Image 1: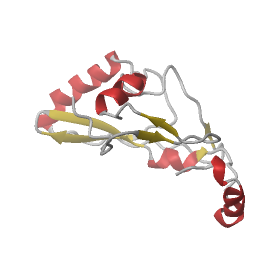
Image 2: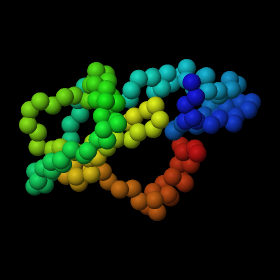
Image 3: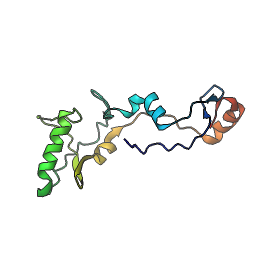
Image 4: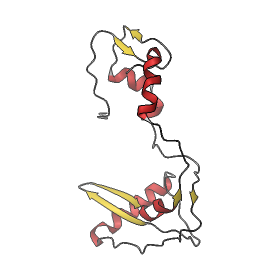
Length: 153
């Protein structure tokens, strides 16, 4: 199984940095197998959010309902099978009632593989995101330099 996510070029000892501590030196080489074993939960499963998730939509933004995009006749059977597979795995859920928001479905087809994506551009415009204070690098840099022992890069 080749993931292509990490490229390791470490030899000898590995150095791991963490906040508030001195670098930890290990005589065990950091290998692909060691990373896969130590962080097994990260590399397993589908990576979907879980049972449910919530977000707040701006009540002043009108709901958008896109008409379905046309699916090429040659891909219709594959798309139906893929949708059934995604539903069976619990990634998507069939909606039988009325819904205010309908996003377009985009299909990406490669030889022997089909991918179904959602085009949520209109929904993204209506989502109210939490306000997170912006950090100011010029303001925070002197603090980082004073506490240099806490931060390792």
